[in-house]
Image 1 (cartoon, rainbow, N blue to C red):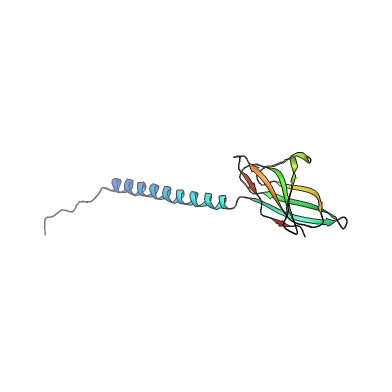
Image 2 (cartoon, rainbow, N blue to C red):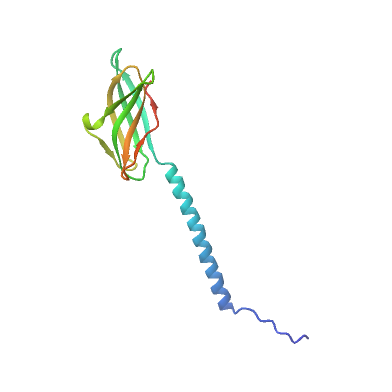
Length: 142
């Protein structure tokens, strides 16, 4: 026979190399899923608002704005901006009308306002804990 001896890695060294590759692969997969889940969570942040209206006269309606804080930090609602049917914006400053509203992550809130009957849409203006001033998507008041 050929007299050549084939030598390979010892089983101990091969096991250590396989364990190292497994740990490195697991770390890479973990980092990938953590970064993609953070971007999905960040994309889903916002304030979800619903509106219910009750007409109290030909000139006024009572508007109930309810919603949920979808941000990962607290928000402070400072203003309600509403738009008349002709597109004219109006602002209700909550700091002068009962105070601002602080909402923790995931918590619900309700704001009751008496608005003109021809108010067509509303949006909330709020600040985050990071100091950003943002607005919710407009909600119909019809």
